[in-house]
Image (cartoon, rainbow, N blue to C red; front, side):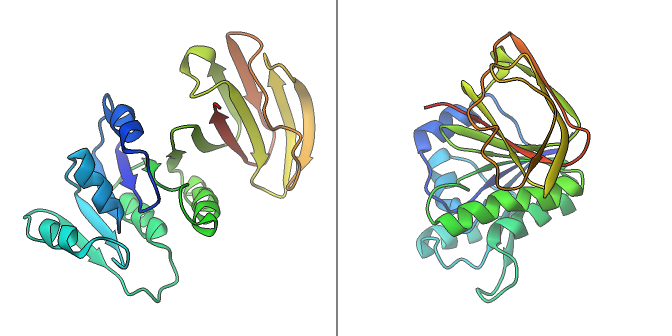
Length: 216
């Protein structure tokens, strides 16, 4: 599976990003606007740089534009897509089937919520998209998944509907189990669950949920 790293222009803990990326490898790296500055601190060279470049330091932008082999996709500020959506489209065009996004949650809340909702568009297209920050791992699920305590990003696991209705939600091996429960968009029923065993199982009959693995 070809995997892409996307670094956006939201606020980011660089020390966290260094630790997160230490043992991970990616086929493509895409910088989104001011995300180029974060990549400079991380000493990572992007394959593509996407955006309208209204927030990146002009000196850093010029520095990378002088390097050979980096593709720049420059857009006008007045456009229908956000820079993060353009980066995900770039990743999809390059054949990536998975993308990890850093810097998508810090900063303006409208961008943070928009980035979360973007996952649904690409989930429907078959792309595995995860958003990370120092406390959270966020991704979408449909069908069935096994959770293992040793692999969790944090203690807490929350499930939020991303479709109007989620039917047949079953949770086994969790502190708060469910059996074929129907939930609707807007509920807080499945927030802050935890594993009660070393493994837990989620099953869905229909619909899509946002999964958030988190710690304090």
